[in-house]
Amino acid sequence: MPTSAESESIFLTGFMGSGKTTLGKLAAAQLELIFFDLDEEIELRTQQTLAEHFVHSEPYFREQEHRILLELLSETGEQPCLIALGGGTSIHSVNQPLIPPERIIFLDVPFPVLEQRLAACTHRPLAHDPRGVKRLHEQRIPLYSQAAITLALSAEDDLMRATDKLIVCLRELLWDMAWGIGCGGLCRVRWVGQSF
Image (cartoon, rainbow, N blue to C red; front, side, top):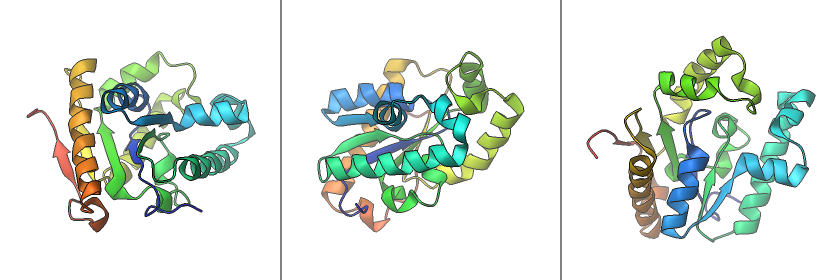
């Protein structure tokens, strides 16, 4: 099983609708990093949509999620990659040894912005219950906040500006990794906010 010491991947976490896939693809392309979206890989490798997985049960989906995360990390090895996690991936204990906090960037988007984005969403199994979404968001935020970098994004950040912010964060983590700083936990939490 791959460990954090063997993987050179950086991970994006955050709630549904925070922009992990969209921003991750754009930033990775500019930095010439290989990009994977874990949810997309699950659908590709199982030939089932996320909704179809959740018809079985959420535990069934989490088993598939863990298995495919293991596959991805095994396949990429020491090659630097950017992986957009699912909204619940990093909070499940079985995945945590594979995605250490010092390799994670949390995309922190205000809940009203997320709520607006999710209102038009039809493909996210957990997004159909507004009260449940709010409760889930409140439960997950403290866990997301354990990431090495919290990137604060607002409604005023357009796609280009948000991507530029993420690129700065990625460069910082890549620098830390090159010098062995990130694995030492010396930079536990850094806020990248409106001062950009």
